[in-house]
Length: 128
Image 1 (tube, rainbow, N blue to C red):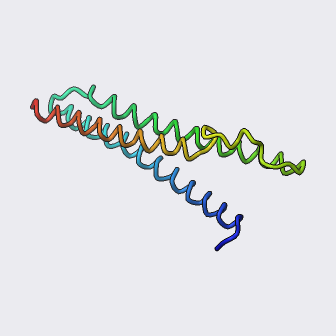
Image 2: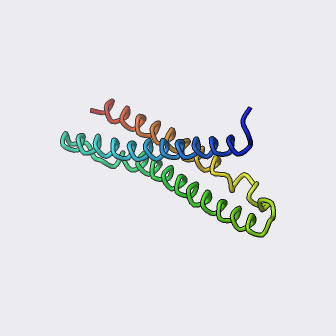
Image 3: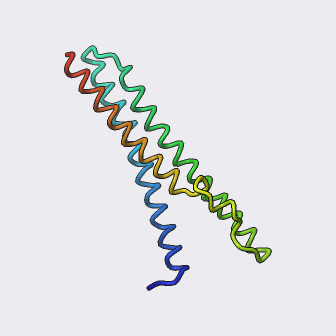
Protein backbone atom coordinates (compact mmCIF):
# COMPACT_ATOMS: atom_id res chain seq x y z
CA UNK A 1 0.00 0.00 0.00
CA UNK A 2 1.14 3.54 -0.70
CA UNK A 3 1.33 6.48 1.60
CA UNK A 4 -1.40 9.08 1.95
CA UNK A 5 0.75 11.56 0.00
CA UNK A 6 1.18 9.06 -2.86
CA UNK A 7 -2.55 8.43 -3.03
CA UNK A 8 -3.30 12.15 -2.93
CA UNK A 9 -0.81 12.84 -5.73
CA UNK A 10 -2.29 10.03 -7.86
CA UNK A 11 -5.80 11.31 -7.16
CA UNK A 12 -4.85 14.80 -8.34
CA UNK A 13 -3.24 13.40 -11.50
CA UNK A 14 -6.38 11.45 -12.32
CA UNK A 15 -8.56 14.50 -11.65
CA UNK A 16 -6.43 16.62 -13.98
CA UNK A 17 -6.65 13.96 -16.69
CA UNK A 18 -10.43 13.69 -16.22
CA UNK A 19 -10.79 17.45 -16.67
CA UNK A 20 -8.70 17.35 -19.85
CA UNK A 21 -10.88 14.54 -21.21
CA UNK A 22 -14.11 16.38 -20.39
CA UNK A 23 -12.82 19.61 -21.95
CA UNK A 24 -11.78 17.69 -25.07
CA UNK A 25 -15.13 15.90 -25.35
CA UNK A 26 -17.23 19.06 -24.90
CA UNK A 27 -15.01 21.18 -27.17
CA UNK A 28 -15.00 18.45 -29.80
CA UNK A 29 -18.77 18.18 -29.49
CA UNK A 30 -19.17 21.88 -30.23
CA UNK A 31 -16.84 21.65 -33.20
CA UNK A 32 -18.55 18.57 -34.58
CA UNK A 33 -22.05 20.00 -34.20
CA UNK A 34 -21.11 23.21 -36.00
CA UNK A 35 -19.29 21.30 -38.72
CA UNK A 36 -22.32 19.09 -39.37
CA UNK A 37 -24.65 22.10 -39.17
CA UNK A 38 -22.52 23.97 -41.70
CA UNK A 39 -22.50 21.02 -44.03
CA UNK A 40 -26.26 20.55 -43.78
CA UNK A 41 -26.96 24.23 -44.45
CA UNK A 42 -25.42 23.82 -47.91
CA UNK A 43 -28.22 21.31 -48.53
CA UNK A 44 -30.93 23.70 -47.33
CA UNK A 45 -31.31 22.48 -43.74
CA UNK A 46 -31.62 25.29 -41.17
CA UNK A 47 -28.82 25.26 -38.58
CA UNK A 48 -31.09 26.05 -35.63
CA UNK A 49 -31.03 22.42 -34.51
CA UNK A 50 -27.38 22.88 -33.47
CA UNK A 51 -28.09 25.42 -30.72
CA UNK A 52 -29.29 22.95 -28.08
CA UNK A 53 -26.46 20.41 -28.31
CA UNK A 54 -23.80 23.13 -28.64
CA UNK A 55 -25.32 24.94 -25.66
CA UNK A 56 -25.23 21.76 -23.56
CA UNK A 57 -21.58 21.19 -24.48
CA UNK A 58 -20.88 24.81 -23.50
CA UNK A 59 -22.51 24.27 -20.10
CA UNK A 60 -20.21 21.26 -19.67
CA UNK A 61 -17.22 23.49 -20.36
CA UNK A 62 -18.47 26.05 -17.84
CA UNK A 63 -18.79 23.36 -15.16
CA UNK A 64 -15.23 22.27 -15.89
CA UNK A 65 -14.13 25.88 -15.42
CA UNK A 66 -15.87 25.95 -12.05
CA UNK A 67 -14.00 22.77 -11.16
CA UNK A 68 -10.65 24.39 -12.03
CA UNK A 69 -11.35 27.49 -9.97
CA UNK A 70 -12.57 25.48 -6.98
CA UNK A 71 -9.44 23.33 -7.11
CA UNK A 72 -7.30 26.45 -7.03
CA UNK A 73 -9.36 27.95 -4.19
CA UNK A 74 -9.08 24.75 -2.13
CA UNK A 75 -5.33 24.63 -2.57
CA UNK A 76 -4.96 28.26 -1.50
CA UNK A 77 -7.08 27.62 1.60
CA UNK A 78 -5.04 24.51 2.41
CA UNK A 79 -1.82 26.49 1.94
CA UNK A 80 -3.05 29.23 4.27
CA UNK A 81 -4.12 26.67 6.89
CA UNK A 82 -0.75 24.90 6.66
CA UNK A 83 1.06 28.22 7.18
CA UNK A 84 -0.60 28.67 10.55
CA UNK A 85 -0.47 24.99 11.47
CA UNK A 86 -4.18 24.20 11.19
CA UNK A 87 -6.02 21.32 9.55
CA UNK A 88 -7.87 21.66 6.26
CA UNK A 89 -10.83 24.05 6.66
CA UNK A 90 -14.01 22.08 7.37
CA UNK A 91 -16.14 23.87 4.76
CA UNK A 92 -13.93 22.48 1.97
CA UNK A 93 -15.25 18.98 2.68
CA UNK A 94 -18.80 19.72 1.48
CA UNK A 95 -19.84 18.04 -1.77
CA UNK A 96 -20.17 21.30 -3.69
CA UNK A 97 -16.52 22.22 -3.02
CA UNK A 98 -15.27 18.97 -4.58
CA UNK A 99 -14.08 19.06 -8.18
CA UNK A 100 -15.47 15.56 -8.66
CA UNK A 101 -19.01 16.95 -8.44
CA UNK A 102 -18.41 19.54 -11.13
CA UNK A 103 -16.39 17.20 -13.36
CA UNK A 104 -19.18 14.64 -13.18
CA UNK A 105 -21.75 17.31 -14.07
CA UNK A 106 -19.59 18.39 -17.04
CA UNK A 107 -19.40 14.79 -18.26
CA UNK A 108 -23.17 14.47 -17.79
CA UNK A 109 -23.72 17.54 -20.00
CA UNK A 110 -21.50 15.97 -22.66
CA UNK A 111 -23.76 12.90 -22.65
CA UNK A 112 -26.95 14.98 -22.77
CA UNK A 113 -25.49 17.19 -25.51
CA UNK A 114 -24.51 14.15 -27.56
CA UNK A 115 -27.99 12.66 -27.14
CA UNK A 116 -29.62 15.98 -28.09
CA UNK A 117 -27.43 16.28 -31.17
CA UNK A 118 -28.09 12.75 -32.33
CA UNK A 119 -31.82 13.12 -31.70
CA UNK A 120 -31.90 16.36 -33.67
CA UNK A 121 -30.03 14.75 -36.55
CA UNK A 122 -32.42 11.80 -36.53
CA UNK A 123 -35.37 14.17 -36.82
CA UNK A 124 -33.68 16.12 -39.62
CA UNK A 125 -32.76 13.01 -41.61
CA UNK A 126 -36.31 11.63 -41.33
CA UNK A 127 -37.76 14.89 -42.64
CA UNK A 128 -35.46 15.11 -45.67
